[in-house]
Each structure stands twice: as C-alpha cells, then as structure tokens.
Image 1 (tube, helix red, strand yellow):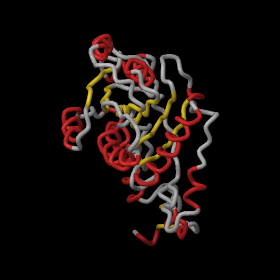
Image 2 (cartoon, helix red, strand yellow):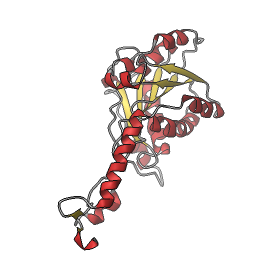
Image 3 (cartoon, helix red, strand yellow):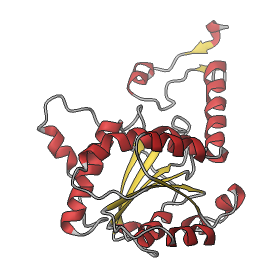
Image 4 (spheres, helix red, strand yellow):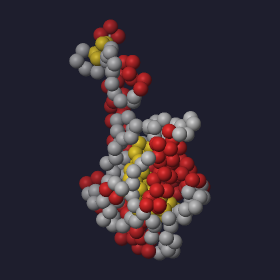
Length: 265
C-alpha cells in the first residue's frame, strides 16, 4: 500500500510547526493515518467546547495553593444558552451578583477570574500553573480572591471586577479550540473594569500552554502589562506590550510561542 503514497516536498518543514502541512497523498485523498488524526483532533475540539468545567476540583486545587476562591455563574443557565446567547455569558446571574454583594469590600489591586470560555480543558489545565508563575512576582499587590466562573465570556470579568472594586481584572479563559490546540488559554487584562468596557480597553495574551506560550513567558508578559497598567492607569490600545524587548537582554531567554486567536468574547 505504501507504494501508492506520494510524499510532499515540504515534508522537511513539518519539524517546525504543528500545522497540518506535507501530509502526503494517496490517490486524490489523504493517507489513512493523517485522516484519522484529523478526525481525532476535530473530536477533541468539539469535546473541549462542550465539556463542563469541574469547579469543585478547581477550587480544591486553588485552595491547596493558598488562594481564596469564589464560585460564580454567568446569566447563561446552561451550555446551550451559552453558545447561542453570547450576551448572557457577559453578565452575572442574579444569584452570583447577590453573592458578590455579600463579599467584604477589599478594593484589591487585581482580581483573577478563571472562566471556562470555549474550552474547559484549558481553564482546568493551564490556569493554576500560570497563577503559580505570576503571583510570586506580585509581591506589592493586593490580590483579591480567585473567582471561578462558569459559562463565562471575556466581558464577565468586567462586572466581577467592578463589584469587587478591583483596579484591574485578569480573565483567564479557555480559547476557541483549534485542530491542534484544544486546551489553549487566553489572558485578558482590563484596567478600571466595569460593565460596558470594550475590547479596545483590554490587552490580550493568547495561546498559553506548554506547546505554545509557556507559563514562564506568559507570566513575564502578564507581570509587565500589570506593572505598566497600574503606572499609566490604562490598558488596551494605549498600553504597548514591550516585554519581549526586556527578554532580549536576558541571557538564555525562552523562545516566544506562536499566538492563537480567541473567540470567547
């Protein structure tokens, strides 16, 4: 059967990317192995979108790392509504809003929100290692409780940050799964969060996972943006990410991973 396979001249380039290139050809179709691999990746991407976030385990893991936690839910009552009504995922449910009203006012410098977004796999796998990498850098920051939010869109963090009186909110959210990355985490940073903030008022770091932007480098970028956001009093289009320039002068700096876009807004 191998006599009928035609190799692609780009085959040597496969070592540099996870993209589906140089797969070869069997007649007018793909060889069996790449076709089966594609079907598996497509199934994993679908599972990532529909798989529920295990909030109990996530809370336990966070508390084991000495983080205080809160459990909240968007106005989307279930996954079907979440996928069909993105607007519901951007606002808190009445129960969650009432629960936040009972939280003692601390006016933290920063609040981290972990949202399932479009990949609960990403939220459960990447959030805690990222927090472990960045929080030791925030020695002079008042960090609020870590919020775990279900059926969450990016803008849900704005309402949470506003109700907690936070100067900055950092949303860690599962990105839209790709066919080679069903567990990619996105980071969205917003200064002076409040309901109605636009995407132009945020900074984004995407593709956070060991195979993409690793935790150490993502933490470096996030710390840089947090520091300058607090100094300048803004985020978004007015805050430029020059964190790579600092790394260029650091010996043995890690390589930068390729970013992927998110669709969890």
